[in-house]
Length: 362
Image (tube, rainbow, N blue to C red; front, side):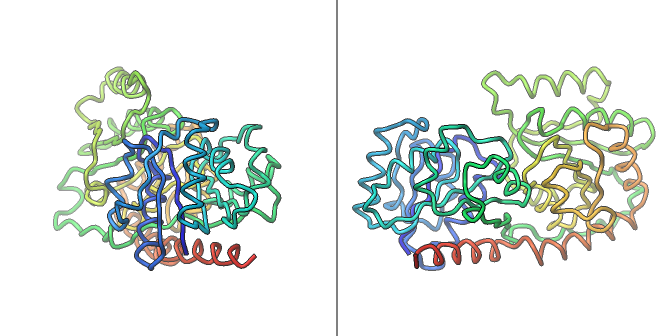
């Protein structure tokens, strides 16, 4: 199939990992994959399976970037594109404009987040064939908004390349003889709950010796205010000698391999890709009870769930795991099996490919 994947993303997170993994995998399977991205897109360096001649760079400034829309329309016509797949909300109206009424191309959207779409997205409804939700929570949210018909919405959960996340090696030293590490990974933002994690750490630190806490992630705000707020709270709670704040993570699997407990403190989460990656590496996960986390984790079986906005309960659960290596090992083993069965990249790509085939037969 001739497929055009589009993303105007200007930073790299879970949705962007989904984009590049899908595009690379489809190209490996023999599809003629084309891409439309910004000239300075952080995605380009990750698209190793894509012929560079198949990458179209456009400003993709916003939903009303008419010039980009007309260039896309010509590209779709010239390359006889069969499937157009957009991944960022601001691109949806623009891509709908790129499909003229005579075009056989089918438009697919992927929705990665729970934030509501705006009224301008209602203008895309007649051009859209399918909307992929990355979780049941996202699908339910889309149905409530009533922008797209129920039959247009399909759930295809995120998948990860398991070869990138080998199970971590067990330390030869007993846990009591080494520093235990508890960490978070994700964009620095109030919605991700890093400050709740810091408050939980302040409860754990006096009770448990030999524990180090780490927060890894970029602050994509224009003025760096999220990182400053976290740093200020760490200082206020006298935790500077117990915390590492990391900006750049070159090897995510290595980061997970150094943790004893992974924490997702999000206040809202559509899916939670980092949770799945940690589980694949055999790291026990403590996650707040977001809609996305409840789809991934079975409490006390494949991880632990904590109430939202409750640093004290988060601290209690983390502390329990830190003092119970048997529970950590059991959760990690169960979680790894769960990821292998339900969250592989192969499953995600196959389901997406089948959706493409189904709508191409229309």
